[in-house]
Image 1 (cartoon, rainbow, N blue to C red):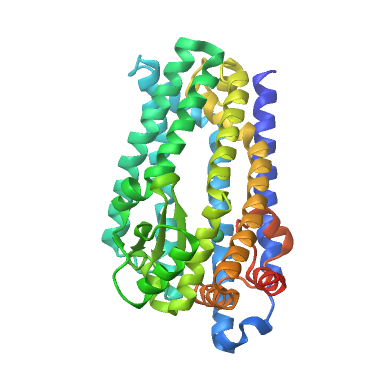
Image 2: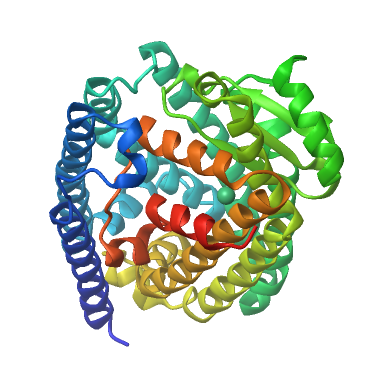
Length: 413
Ligand SMILES: [Zn+2]
């Protein structure tokens, strides 16, 4: 395929993706409703409900702006051969192919992050602050960025170097070997995320003795889930929003409760949330999502192996000769419609898993307590109560609140 044709396809994919996302955002915004659903009436007054509508409107409008900015920026880079130009500037100084790729991605990613810092800043310190969510200090914002840079360049750099090395010594069959490495890497991250990566950004403390711990002890004995794996995280360091999640595989499994969650919920509600998280483990959601992500990685690498040695991809991006790093960028865009579809399928599976974990919490603990916790979470986070079904279909990893409440009511207890 000629470079001009490849560039045309890349541009068409970029434009369609952009327009599609904006249309989804727009219809979701138009789906807002003024009436408070019966289910959460007790938690909302008119004023607070209006605040949640305002929050969603502000967020969507801001995302229109950031999406337009990023779209124009990447469109400009593509049309004017910006990626090829950066490659051409760096090439005379760096002979080594892998070193060149590392510096290339370092420059592109750092530049794109720095350019978008004003937007990240506005999102955190203006919009989130306006609705009382932001707790991030300027100091935390800066240290987060620096830690992110260091972590990203170490991990990303190591993986990219290995990928390119395998491409060089093995050729088109590299995908099998790098797939095995990636599978091991994902497993490692899954197992050690809460013990290595999370502590770089947050403080995790084992749940302290008290009423909550006693209540959890009773539940975990019944559910046969070890108690020493429950941690409290200082989520309040960054945001007033609350959350809980499950992480890890096998002996490394952990449940993390945000301190903001603990502060705003009763013991019953917290045990119900915990029961939901244990449900993800008991229903084998964790192990399945790991296996699915490995299949996905092999698939991506296989398709990559068919395209990454094609010189015309580099030339389409404005390069003067074949460069793996230019081809990787071109591949990223060309593959995005397919990854959009696999993403859609994983979201569908994830929503199904949420219903199952809710059902588990109802069976083993208390459906009403979980319903109350979900309502409070939704209200405290000013979540959208009437997201458009099409928007949910494409973007939601969790079912909307009203659907979860209806399912909890229906399931036989
Ligand atoms: Zn869940």
